[in-house]
Length: 389
Ligand SMILES: Cc1ncc(COP(=O)(O)O)c(C=O)c1O
Image (cartoon, rainbow, N blue to C red; front, side, top):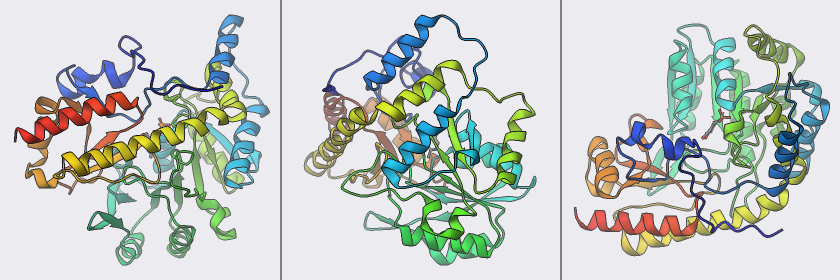
């Protein structure tokens, strides 16, 4: 089947946060929504068919989480990443953010320290801080638009950390990690007895011939040490269904995690999420293989448009995720002025860069998972706005 990602689908009234929460987030509905990380594309047809059939059954009582669900996820990981998962060490979670929160509660004492590498997905800060834990930052260092890890700082910060949250691949910088770097990180974490949670939610969205390496696959030690959060919700645009998975290195950690949820009587999936995930991982590959080049071409469009028409804004095609990192520092605006500029002048709903790295000034994140024509409109609006400055 051929998918048409150019199709504009009106999501107004579809209860989509991206559209219907514009007033709450930006104070106006009059912005093109290129913020929260979901896509404006309809998902793969086999998923739609499976959900339609499930809906037709009309019976959605308490739902058993059967083996086929975990097996579909494990088979996907084996096929795409060469990762052999022992399904008896897998757990389910409402979402990756809930997994992060649970791991923070389980591994870090109140007042303890969660190590994150910033800029990073803002919930890494929030899940630690809302739980009364401290965030310690290993900041990426930027040189001429290239962001690199500060290893000496990482090792120093590990000495007081109780948990390391790794974003692999990385949102918002779009980096695919090198296996040697992952190995070195895990070795250091083991040396300083710091548990690792590897958030791999974006691991199917990889470009430019790069390859995702699951952190657990870098060494035997990593296999015995690292906890991994995976999900089909980013890959197949199913975030509203709320289901993800966690893979543990041993039964003890899995039990602790499962107990955390069981204490709130959270131990069953919603009936539709099970059906959708199974269909996605068993039959969604054809759709994904068509989606990836479309998104990659979207990146190229934005990069070349900025280079030719808006040179004050610097960006690059990320190797992973569908999120682009915009360096707007040349506009000479502070964070609040830049926020207002994007809303009032460019009429774009973007994520503010400082929410991913609180010390940053002048960055924005743009979600490029939309029809090309939407990006064309967005770039025109941005160009006009910059000219008016
Ligand atoms: C790195 C990362 N982790 C987790 C999430 C959200 O995960 P979930 O919807 O499963 O809670 C996102 C969403 O953008 C993300 O970028």
